[in-house]
Structure formats: structure tokens, C-alpha cells
Amino acid sequence: MQRKNMEHGPEKGEEGSTACDGCRDRECSANARKQGESAQDFAERRELESRLCRIAHKVVVLSGKGGVGKSTVAVNIAAALQMVGKRVGLLDVDIHGPSIPTMLGLEGVSLQSGPGGLLPADANGMKVMSLGFLLPDPDQAVIWRGPLKMGAIKQFLKDVDWGDLDYLVIDSPPGTGDEPLSVCQLIGKLDGAVIVTTPQKVAAVDVRKSITFCRQLGVPVLGVVENMNGFACPKCGEVSAVFSSGGGKRIVTDMNTPFLGSIPIDPAITLSGDSGRPYVSAFASSPTAEIMRRIVTPLLALDPGAAEVTAKNVKTNKEKNNMKIAIPLADGKLAMHFGHCGSFALVEADPVEKKIVKREDLEAPPHEPGLLPKWLAERGANLIIAGGMGQRAQALFCEHGIQVVIGAPAETPETLVASYLAGTLQSGENVCDH
Ligand code: ADP
Image (cartoon, rainbow, N blue to C red):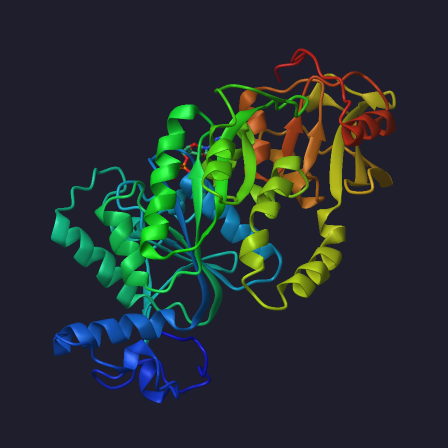
């Protein structure tokens, strides 16, 4: 199946016709009935291939087992691609735990049909399809019998009208069994796989299996991501070891596979997932978001001209990537009682050049529950440096895309921001719980 020559006509018109009918690529596999293929199988395959033909690059995210952060990585890869201007779709075929709707704030969305089929849901411009949208009760365990399961995946792939996309990121079922196998086979020509693992030695066996799985299917391994490698302290950002580490890295060296990066355990990643905002865009200026953006480098390399596009977008997004740091003030220094401060310093800083761009001081809004996160988000804040803050308040700020560093000393905003940018900000006890 090729994706060239696609400046053709209708998607799916009269009964039985597909976008393939207008395609001039005579060598495309969708145009030839395979030996022994029934008329119905041929029609179905043609329909599926014609849909996927309009997607320039298809990348599957795999993991040896569940719970390692495969969906988290898939969401953030998709969002990072979107951030550099790509047209992106995200397909969640994790039949056991379709978590993408929650991670993108799309719970309870009902799908619409268009003339060309089922329309994906929209998450800030990202096209999203999940088996979760089709389940009557998201809390109910899904028990799929083998053939039914494959039929559902096939139907689902065949019915979705993606339109034209630069990338489709596919969140596969975990493991290396029948389910990911069916997904990879049904999708056909995949541009590559990203394998997600955790750093412990025991996870290494799963990575080996996943790499072998890809090699057997002829799917290029774009690389391995080690997730949950160390704990990123929400106070100071310092990463400390939690599990034994280096398992993933050793395997990639052994198996001659690229290593794409290590993502630490960060409570803000969990909160982002729970509140429906991809971490990489909600916390765009954090070091972990930078790691996530680097993970998509080999995906961007699939696209000719991507380097220039990326450079251009990075440039135009520079202002967007500047941080706006809010600091509650009392007598010109950080106020320890966050919710009761009289004013805020809003400091704009360039995290790359590590310098302060400007500062403005704002009178704090009235002390009303739930008002501050919205108020600060509207003013573009994406980080708060505070003396102390309760967990619930931190979660509320996270929902609004604002990261919180607590335990900072009573210093001037300039001193605090400079040491934050230099990675030397002192943070101590949580000195205030309200
Ligand atoms: P999988 O798709 O492999 O089953 P998920 O992506 O659903 O795993 O992640 C499982 C849980 O772990 C989710 O609640 C997610 O928010 C959380 N999580 C994943 N990676 C991280 C991380 N690096 N730091 C903190 N929480 C994480």
C-alpha cells in the first residue's frame, strides 16, 4: 500500500466504492485481490487500506506488559508532534484498559458519524479514537472472546474516517500476544514502533520480547523509552532513584536498538493524565517535557523536511515556551501564606537562555475557593514557586496546567527565579497547608 497519488476524489461514495477507486497508483496492494481472498475479505481490506492510505506515518507504541506508562507515552508523543505543527491522530486499541479518553479529557464523548464513516473525537485539534468510546460502561471489565476481539478491532479500524494526517500514533494492547499482533497486521505498513518499559532488570525480558516481536513482523524499532526512572521531586525537581535502574538501557545496547530517553516518576504526570491534559503541553517548560520532545525526534525524521518545520516551529513557539512564574508576595518577598497574599509577581523567564525576560506585579484576586487557579492560568502562569501548599490546591493548579514548586524560602522573585533556572532552588518543608 502506498500513500502517494492521493489527490483523488471521494472517500466512499456509492455502495462498495472506496477512495481507492480514484487512485492512480496501480501498484498499490489495495488494488489487487490476493490469491485465495474472498470477495468480502478483499472489499474489507480495500476499505481499510484506503482509510489508512491518507495517513503519512503510522507509529505503534508497544510495551511488554500493562501499567508501564504506554498510554502516557502515546498521548505525549502525539501531543509533542502536534506541538510542532503536525496533523496527528491517536488510536487507542488497548482493549483491556482504554485510558486515552480520560487522559485527554474526552470521557463521555459520543462519537458522530459523517458521510465517510465514524468521526474521531477532537482533543484540541488532535483526532482521537478509542475503544473506550464504544464501551457502554467505562467501569465495566471487558471480556472479549478471541474472534470477537479481533472482529471488533478490525471493524473499528475500518470504520474510522481519519481524513488526512501526518501521523497516527497507535496505543497497542500490551504484550506480544495475539492482540498487538492483530493490530500490527491489520494496520499493515507501520513506519515503526516505540517500546515503553520500566527500568528494573525484570522488565528487560519484556523489552527483548517486544524487540523480537517487531523484528519478526518487519516493524522497525524506532527506540525504547524507559518510563518511571527515578522520582522527580515536586519541590526541587531533583530526580532520585526508586527502582533498580539501567535495565532498559543495557538491553538496547545488547540488541542494537536506539534508546530514546528516561522519563522520571513525576506526580504532575499522573495529575495531567487524570485531568485530561497531556503533560508535554501542560508543563511545556519542564525538563521532563523536554525529554518527551526529544523522544519524538526519530518520528519527525520519518517526515522529509521535518527538520526545517521543527526548527521553524521551535522558533515561533519560543515565546510560547517562555515560562511565566507566579510568586505570592509579602513585603516584596515570597509570602508563606499562599492563599492570603496581597499580590503576585508574574515573572516571564526564558528557560533555554536561563534568564528573566520581564516581571509584572499583580494585585491578588478576592480570596474565593477555586478562583486562583483560573485567574493565574488566564494570565499565562505555568509555574508557581510557593512556600507551601496543600495537595488539593496543587491538583487544582495542575488541572489548569500550572506546575507547583513548594518549600521555597522567603526571597525576592528575582532570586527565586534565578535559582530555579539554575537548578539550585532550595526547597524545604511544606510550611503552609492552605
Ligand atoms: P499503560 O498504558 O502501560 O497501562 P498508563 O500510561 O495507563 O500505563 O499509566 C499507568 C498509570 O501510571 C497512569 O495513572 C499514569 O498517569 C501513571 N504514570 C505513567 N507514567 C508516569 C510517570 N512517569 N510518572 C507518574 N505517573 C505516571
